[in-house]
Image: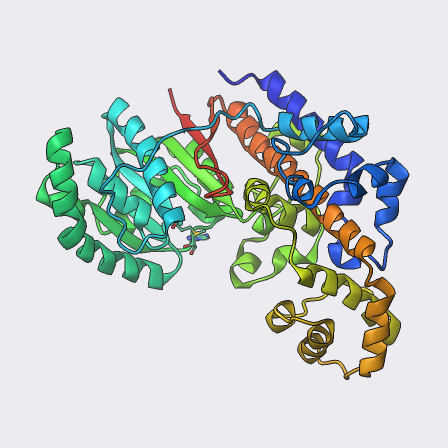
Length: 468
Ligand SMILES: C[S@@+](CC[C@H](N)C(=O)[O-])C[C@H]1O[C@@H](n2cnc3c(N)ncnc32)[C@H](O)[C@@H]1O
């Protein structure tokens, strides 16, 4: 059972951490040298300890579960590590292995993992509540998940909603291929498992192109989908909403729709792309970037963050840096056991050059070719081209690089980078807790589980809820 009080305590803990470690979260790493960000690590008394860590220890910093805490760790840093972990350690992890013979057809190993685990979570609800006859997928992409659900839950109709026509068309094509390739194999497997699939199972999935917006949050949602899908799903049957990596605002749109429409009985939703979330207060121009985002980004919308009463009473707004951080992959970074790429250092030095030569201090996008350059000279040339700036003499570039090209400056930058990632899940937890509290405000008891292995699929948390 979800205890509101515990969620509120954790939300407050997240807020305190975000406030206390603002200097880590909100500092753009490109300005690491320009703003002398390392000074804050000196001031807090962590510098000596962090600089004494081995390369391997540094790689383990982003994940609080692997952070190398020893008796030498400054107490405030050890506390930060355990506080970070405590903000999401109450979300239990799901363990299950992909069965042998799982037919992949175009799915990456990551997608197979997600589709299998999420598909099984959906199936278990459908098996328990036999009155749910339809599943509606928000942001179905190429249709991997809805197809899996249609295949493994005979008799259930599945509609995949996606704004990209190319996805719906691809979904249909793939569906036909699947019918030929996957079904006979799956059928064979299921003869053993006795799940009773029939040849028509694949006719139970239909992709539909639609851009979901606030106006779709209505009592008549299922009825609308029935009309749009030309009666493929019924207007009155009990339905489930699912979303696998329903990006940005799409997850809160899903939650609001679930609450509003009486035929919607349950949800299984995993969010992602937190940088695309609309907040009730515009704290960054970034939120209106992009074609789709422009249409969705109305801070007055009911699904803008925060959605829960608790957080609306004393809201916190994330900066662009904080939301970008929430989309990082701490466990994957720690498990890869590699230090950040060299271009991170180049970028910080380049910012100094920009300030010295062009009097420009604001962060900017230097483009892909700079990021893949093997030397600082090449990095600068590519970045100047991208930024449409005049070239700077090689000697000036060289001397700027030499000012910082010592092992300690680069190491400080990498440590700072790793420490920021340590806080990534705190931001994500607060977003998840807001969504849970919002459901509780509406008398729905949700649960959040670590559905995916975070190394395989970093956006791993699923919200599951059912109306009683
Ligand atoms: C991260 S992808 C996930 C795709 C799919 N669920 C999967 O896991 O393979 C998000 C999908 O949501 C779709 N999408 C995002 N916002 C949407 C909206 N407002 N309405 C409909 N589709 C949307 C995108 O086109 C994209 O295919």
